[in-house]
Image (cartoon, rainbow, N blue to C red):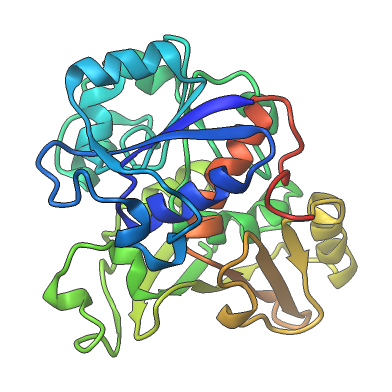
Length: 338
């Protein structure tokens, strides 16, 4: 078995990832870590997250620089469920040694340093690892992930959006004169575990945020290959993302061509489910799936696609496990779908 650990294990994503690794037949969950200043240090993860009680009997250990270097030499895989700044700061100590790094932060997703600084508020100075990082869109970048030393696991909104759009773009069906318009709604767990008034369940109704300025917009555009308009919304529910995407296809494109593009992309993929009706968030919460459905208006040339995922799983933890499966020579869905 491959020996793994999680740094940043106290958050929602870290807890989900811990369970997936604990139950995986080929990965050993050896240790869990939090920052030195974390109030969760030395607590059992099962006491912090009740759904892990009696399932994972591991404490949340405080991480330090010496421990980082030790882990890099002794683990097979290290998962970072950490803030962007922490992943950036620690990468030189972790990457390029024995361990393969799976970073769930946004620190190494964007190659353009000026764009990164604009959207993340600090400069990425890790040129070596920025150049080497592989974007871990597991259903599309399998060959690159299999060779990676550092995998930048995609964001949750980009995962939902790119899964819906890439079959169309890659088949050259999109009208390049019209940007895809993405309206997506996320549950409050997407804001993380730390308490904040604007993401408190009692304060949230349904509202747009980050309009024409959200950091996931350049991520979607970069890995799709064309500019998009992305508007995220925060909804009054715990988890899940529903993205409704409107695109204009090229003149003469038929419904058969659209269906064929999705079938070619995903018919053999057990993670992406091509539905016969509009998916809803309840269909995918607590699962690793991405559910897709679409409707085409042949008269206008407009196509509407809905993509539904669990933001903590397919949008984070289970996609990280997909990447780890690929990197260590297993089927992408091992430990996720029977």
